[in-house]
Length: 253
Ligand SMILES: Cc1cc2nc3c(=O)[nH]c(=O)nc-3n(C[C@H](O)[C@H](O)[C@H](O)COP(=O)(O)O)c2cc1C
Image (cartoon, rainbow, N blue to C red; front, side):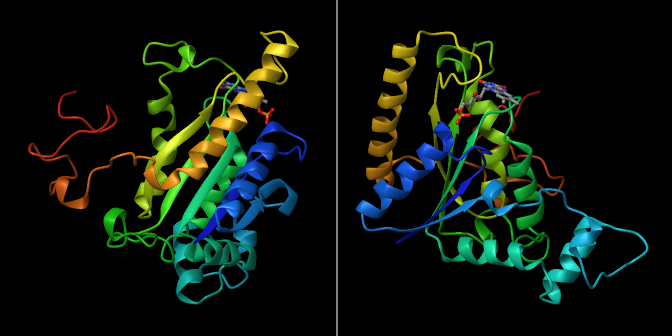
């Protein structure tokens, strides 16, 4: 079994880097072969742009999807994008490790989606969801947040964590992954401190224990449900008999 960890944090001594290293160690102990893409260390450029396409379809006007499709068809995607796709192809499990920044992933990870999930190569209108490139593989978010679990409850001031993470999970489902229930590390107070240092230290130690256990039992961890292609009608709306799994796709406005 192979796992691939994508780490999106600029500081090698960060708690996020520590969680990525923990995952690497715990999975290896369980017999997994683990690869890591440390996006900052790799100098990954998250900005999709014309400069990445050396044999452009249209040198006069850059259109990201057209160029991605052209490069996919001609096997001219940038090497580091093709390498990352190869790591995903080889993996049974993908873990995205990142801190919540402004209620979203850091820009470098958003750009990883923009560039690595290339149109043509990774998705087309026929190659999506249960027909997606990565069907049969699992993917999971491991996210650190600065505030408490209560603030991420359905009525919390940070926003319902299930809804906050839904769009990122949806990207994974879109390209065919089975999406594993995310692991959220709450109260990872770094720059802004609400608690005393001993409390924070004890909390961070407990999180590593929980994370290790989650990885040791990854096979039993539930998936986040998403609708299947057949559950959307001709008009692109959910059909009346299909289940609704999230307020993002619901039967009533
Ligand atoms: C630019 C930036 C934006 C942040 N936005 C949020 C946020 O929206 N919600 C939150 O809970 N924490 C937020 N934080 C706090 C980080 O999530 C927290 O510091 C991080 O998860 C700690 O992990 P680290 O020690 O590995 O950096 C933000 C931090 C930064 C630097």
